[in-house]
Length: 327
Ligand code: G3H
Ligand code: 13P
Ligand code: ZN
Image (cartoon, rainbow, N blue to C red; front, top):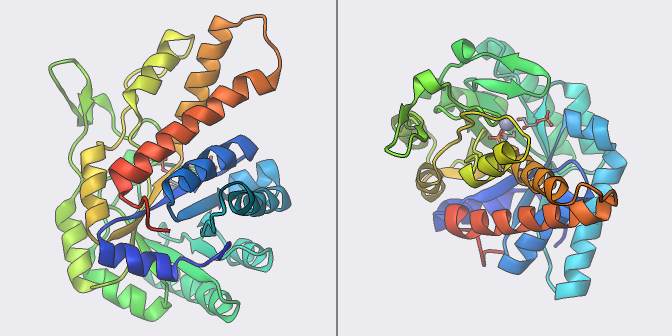
């Protein structure tokens, strides 16, 4: 199986009432942590690469590290690990084309910031090229608050997806999946303290996701795969470790796992997670250096960081996405 498109994965996820985890990858340890978790839990995977990740690590390195993970799964566990390699937030036809030509099996064209007709036009152009090359396309309607690559999307710009637009958008573009905005956002600060309430322990409780919009969208697009971006839960144990070991991340808050679980059971087939990987790695490394200020071998601190990613991804695959045993 190896590198696959998401078509079959999404069909099975939709019918089975679970979601596929789409994890952003930037280096070898992140790829190893995620893929080792997927091997352990026999879960299908989407590994996604942003424009920034591609600029940081280079297309060829990421692509070959992912291929190495598939080979390792076969050799070390006799497991045919299905992986979709996906471009996250492609911002131009040229970038999408370059990823398709370079072997990605899925791309996202994100023109959600443009007026509807312009979004349709560029998405359609990407879909035509992608489908000619056996690649699938994710598009987006509605915009999330937070940071997307280097562009700041402020909370005020955030606009929920309008369910009355989704059918026409999907029909006119021919896209294979659709990212919608129902109140998630990118980064480790998804909501300001003013947008939240506090529980009895003083921990911020974010406003609930707009499941009414998700329900409306899925009624209008039965069987069609819906994607949620900005779906890190910002585990408070990592925030605490960071803050107790020299970091400063006050009031970092994410999407409650219960809401992600609910989304995964419905029409949402792909749940995007990046910030939680960064938090796991940063928490581990900060703690390591506080405990071992004299160490300087990267293997010593990257090893526990990779193990922390693996443990966290295993938890997500089993307890949030419900995709364990589905590969
Ligand atoms: O949605 C954005 C992703 O978290 C990618 O972030 O551009 O820093 O790689 P990045
Ligand atoms: P998080 O920042 O919530 O991890 O979102 C990641 C994402 O949507 C990548 O496209
Ligand atoms: Zn995103």
